[in-house]
Amino acid sequence: MGKDDKYAEELEVAVRVVIMVCSLCQRLQQKLVSDSGGGGHVKSKDDDSPVTVADWSVQATVSLILSETFGSENVSIVAEEDVQTLSKADSEGLLAAVVKAVNECLAEAPKYGLWTPDGALGTSQILEAINRCNSSGGPTGRHWVLDPVDGTLGFVRGDQYAIALALIEDGKVVLGVLGCPNYPLKKELLNYLHKHNQTISTPSLSTSETREKGCVMYARKGTGEAWMQPLIHGDKKLEWPNSARQIRVSPCVDPALATVCEPVERANSNHSFTAGVTQTMGLRTQPMRVHSMVKYAAIACGDAEIFMKFARSGYKEKIWDHAAGVIIVEEAGGVVTDAGGHSLDFSRGLYIEGLDRGILACCGAILHEKIIGAVYASWEASNL
Image (cartoon, rainbow, N blue to C red; front, side):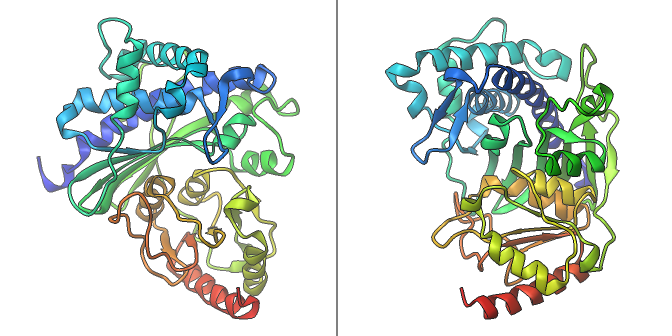
């Protein structure tokens, strides 16, 4: 295997499994949205963020596929969920729903060119698969990093969310895959859905337009290439590489013409500081508030130019919320740093340590320098 092929097998398996679990999530989200708010299928974790059947089902499925493909002794997975809530006595219904969802998903695995078990897996095997994702990463070795459903709130509301899988080797992200099951394949729809606060069942859009959504974006370090692959529907089989097309960041260098993405939740980002920065830069467009790592996807494929996140004091950014998005934006030609212009450090365990104020992702170096300047000016002015 030549140097250019390094991580090719890992990337292929990662893309296949993410496409497969996107399909699982689409089914579960439709059920959740049509069941008037989801009934008993949304639980709160200790930090009150809703966790759905999808989070655990995706984590179990990805864990099982990676362990079967590469050997469980060789696979270290850092992931968001654990089995505590699922193991409680009052979670029987939730656990049964997870077991059912995982088995239904794995039964379709041959369609995606992946391993499938001989028969249905039992509860203990699925809990074990979720629990196996207990690595804490670090500066040495190879660690898969998974956020099974990033933007759970978006998922529950029938809005944008992402499935993010990355591979870190010796502290550096070497590949990233972002599954965006509701990502519209036409840019104007992303803005339309955002402005009109529409969910997946958008009555004022034609069926063909709303159906044309959902993709996986992926990249491998050092290739200078990022790719977007539509999801597969119906009985189609996943061909590799299928109908992937190369994506590039926007060529925009004028802040006045740039579109900014920011988190929807105020708890996750300081909207007023972001507004100050955009004003300093002379941005004219309204910020687009988008759930989850879909913001990185929008920058990688040129649908937006800037993503800024300034979390509240004391909040620590987790590696699974950024790893896959960062490498895809970088390989597509973009720049991602903290507010001081330093690269993000994924080698320190579960959190991105030493972060200077916030995270800035941008379509290119020229615009990036202007944002850094505006951040410093706004920071001085607000004296936060």
